[in-house]
Image 1 (tube, helix red, strand yellow):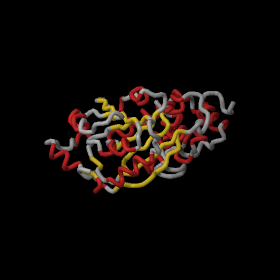
Image 2 (cartoon, one colour):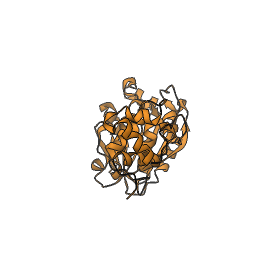
Image 3 (cartoon, one colour):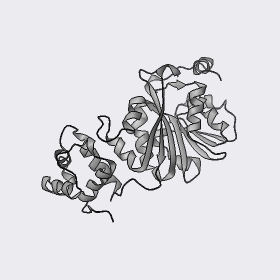
Image 4 (cartoon, one colour):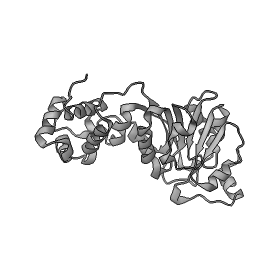
Length: 278
């Protein structure tokens, strides 16, 4: 397989730092990433930011129908070297893409080596489109993968740990040293798999309200949950927040990082006037 450096040189291109372009060309790592999706022949998969097409080649070898979403016109032209009836290249911003619609299916697998500055927007997009995503495998900054897989009580446990944990089962598969990329980033990466749960981990009354509760809880990590939540006036007065926490069986003096997904859901239901599960 031709290396990223060689393809870029041949096409007179250079990595765009402002777009966070770091190309993975290690065949063993690419094969592992494609295998982690467990694609079936003919299954639809959307690849975000395919770049020069190194991972795309391995995805095509599975027999899958690949939709590659790439906003860099230079990379779109480079992808034209991959001639396959099972490949569709879409010139678009991956952070704004409707994955299932682009693939022409109701539920789709998603994969990609995510630019670090687009990781959070894409993960929030996955949350918004969760009912149409069966699973996702992303290469992200190692610390981000660790954060998403963190357990309650960990210092790295945070907003996205809870929000994604409500609907997906996260698993850090393996790490990728920086030197495997061209150019090498300043930090190591990791491959993260998100498997959609058949049913959410807990009941919430409203997704937007749940996100607001969790966001308020983590907005001031050093403060107690009572103080953090009552700082958002839309969630209620101090007395109402205290009553909701007590109704949910959560000590108001605890901090957000100690609450499980299920406990956050109980707090959200209580703040909505529904402390008990239906």
